[in-house]
Length: 491
Image (cartoon, rainbow, N blue to C red; front, top):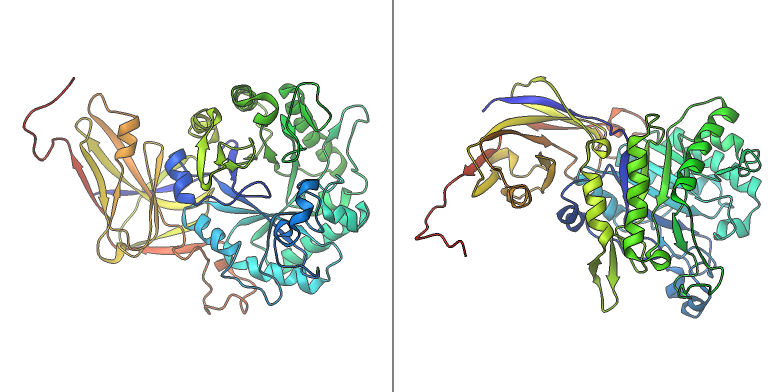
């Protein structure tokens, strides 16, 4: 069967998904893929690192259960799950097990770390060494740093926080150049005509790779202590969606002005809170924001992270079943967001790049820069079976498959991938041709070094790209008639 080379490129606006935080547990990527039918550019994880604290590395709410009544931030350090890497750390524990899972499924890691700002360089170098084998990933350091709620703001003044960011960013450029840094600081203040604390964080804005802000369309910051009731207090709010949109856009314009630079701008946390508005208005607010973004000819926003997939409150596409935290209860917003995720504006385009000859090597760089191959498939009509079989040297390889806008994962050792879910949702009404696109993210989730020891290889192309050799094409089974049937039942 003839095959062609294809390139995976950047979306007009990429979508990342938050997965786990102080408000929820991590949900595995296979479950999310089965719900969304498509990969995100990146998956956002949130962790904390205060290795000098006495109770470290326990999660704060577990170590100090009596503090829970005071709210999510009433702890010595943030109630995210502990980052277990660093000096004398465990690279087989959290978050590395999840980071590998994310990358195997063709997505980039977007890691948020709240970090003790008094740590010496050796601790930061330890983190940089941890992150070297995870390809082109993103690191958001001490986010929302112009606020007052995080513990690092109680341990240092704002200038110290800004200087810490600059110091860590420079260490990463030396020890882990594959990592792009995200500065999530203040946003534009209309009355002042400035970005919040722009003077203090000016150098940090210049040093970072990506500018960012967090803004919710509605938020219950009193969760989980209080319940939102009309006229009940000041621990929740709802904002005008268009004002939030305009403020974010003005933040980018102001950062360009004060730095003389132009960098990608993202919103690292965006959503509406169903605690405040109810589930239906929550969904409509996000739809309005995303529709306006798509229609804006400026295309000013590089990406945003939807916070989050499953939430213990009402900030998720699913909410956690209070009887069983392994179960999510789908919210109205999930179907709306899934429709948006599949739009061309929010999708990484797959571009034809000529014929390819086997054997070949497929390069995986990132969810926005990779090489794959495509196979032309002809469908006579609605299929009864549509399967892809992997034999020989293909059996132990790792693949992501795309057909008709739906994505499928093939793990090492998996022999058959069933693609019929596409046709359950999008039944064919007649003959058509489709392309099966195949990409090869790293099977281990890591970028391997020539020496097999990434602590000894601080530089090199291995940090940016991995290669998978393909000697043969998989076998595609398309059946348009049932193997056996006595009669049809249409009632």
